Structure formats: structure tokens, C-alpha cells
Length: 174
Image 1 (tube, rainbow, N blue to C red):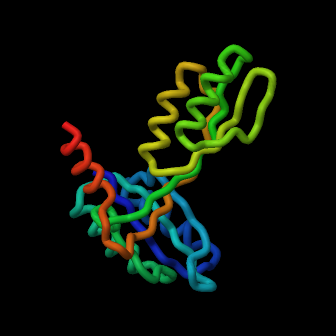
Image 2: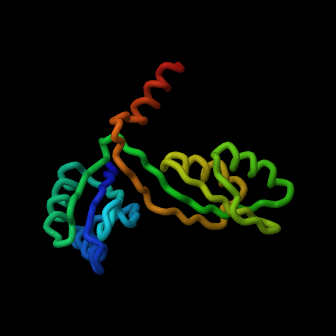
């Protein structure tokens, strides 16, 4: 199972290196990593996606707390969250195929950020499922390059679980 961890750390040199080292020493892969300033000056938020069983993630959380500059660790996997990623995708786009590609771009509420004679670069932001879906749709045109940020996530203060609501809606439609 993939777990999303939200880690607040003091914004000091070497913190990310120590966290990555902790995971490397234990043989764990970090599938996605996003780091940026948090709401408080001098504090950064690290959002990472890590595969592993609950028990192992619990041990990793305890190990993270032992690191000097770690302030707070939260496994937000089962918590209602707002999750987003950003992706740039460069796709082959001959004159004949542009209108079809632009239609897909519009459907996904993405935007074209660069145009050349034979390609389009598209910017997409949204939940991770949206990223997978647009890549599947654009695959048939030939994808040249993809650059993706890691997942960023904040817990929902409302407590509304949109995944639960989506599953309910799907059941009601059938």
C-alpha cells in the first residue's frame, strides 16, 4: 500500500538529506517527494509517497521523529485530503492532430504552455488520478517528455472525504 506522509521540518541545510538517508538505510523507496516552505517562517513541509505496510510506516514515522530537525510527522493516507500534482507533458502534435489534442487539453482543464511545429507542451494540475488519465489519453500521439512534481497534500478541515463521495456517486449511477 502507498502511504502519504506529511512531515514538518526546521528549514535548515541537510534535513532532506538526513531524511532520505534514513529511508535509504532501511531499503525504502520514496516514490514521490515535494518540499516547500510551510505556513510558519523557518519551517518546511515535506510531502512524500512511500510504499509499505502500516506497521513498517509506523516504524519509519518513529525513526523520523528521532531526527533532530523533524517537528511533526503525519500519515495522512486515510485522512480526507486535498491532493495535487503538477505535470508538464510534451507530446507530438502534427497540424492534423492538433485539434484533437487541444480538445483533450480542454476536457482536462489543462493548458498549452509551448507550441512548436511538431509538438505541444501541456501543463496539467490536479489529483494523481487526473495525471494518469491524461497521460493515457495523450499516449496515442506519442509522448516525448514528462516532468512531474511530487504530490502535495493538506488535510481537509471540513473532514469531507471526496474519495468516499466519488464512490457513493458511482454506486448511485448504476
